[in-house]
Length: 293
Ligand code: 5RP
Image 1 (tube, helix red, strand yellow):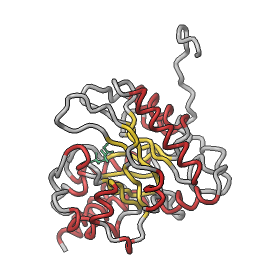
Image 2 (spheres, protein in one colour):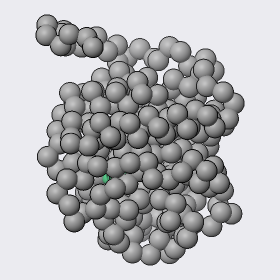
Image 3 (spheres, helix red, strand yellow):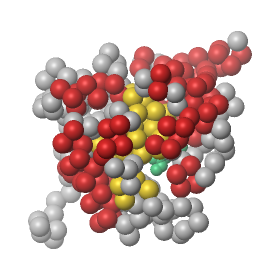
Image 4 (spheres, protein in one colour):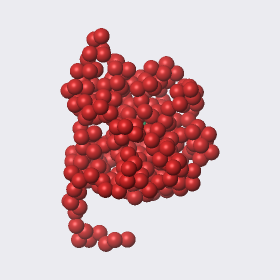
């Protein structure tokens, strides 16, 4: 292992220089993958915009029926048309998402903790690769707790998913966890996102932070940004806008969509910012227009 003493802090991120190994493929770092992997990534990341709006509704796997997700069978049909990709557990998707939607699925495949515990950092890959294939998932989503008690086991589980995924050309999405006591600094996100990319994931889900441009530049695969706890719609659209401007390839938003008073209008406004280059202000005006129609 490299000697940490005297290690020089990274600072030359060349944030304004395009990633240079993309060939003619629209997903960052994916030029050298095979056809199946590229096909699945193209279901997640729109080939025209290169971006994605993922709708995250996997919260129940450790929180139970949180606000907005009481009835997935009612909610998801209202929103699915406006999402590129649905992120949920196999139980939620099998029971509540009609297969006729033919949507890209980011299958939440790790679990192990619940809100009844103080330490949520112990998760393993609990969904077999056969089920991932049977559900025609476009990505396997595994949460990794860098810097927490469960770091080693979650890194091992993530690598297990990457190994299975490589065998069948299914991308893995590494999810950077931020527990109660865990850091949310740009140094933390630089470390965690880069570690996950180096383990071989094809997508990293992370959080927005200061100097996000550097985090995105130093991560050789696409970043999608989680929404986090519910904030006003205007602010959530600013988060989406800043993320895209900072180099994210999309958002994976949950509560800021399904806990909005107007979830359908909100997800459409997010789509305008992510895919169509709307500013946050234009996105919010679009949202208000829809709401007041
Ligand atoms: C939790 C997750 C969630 O999917 C993620 O937090 C996105 O949801 P939200 O936008 O509500 O934060 O991966 O592990």
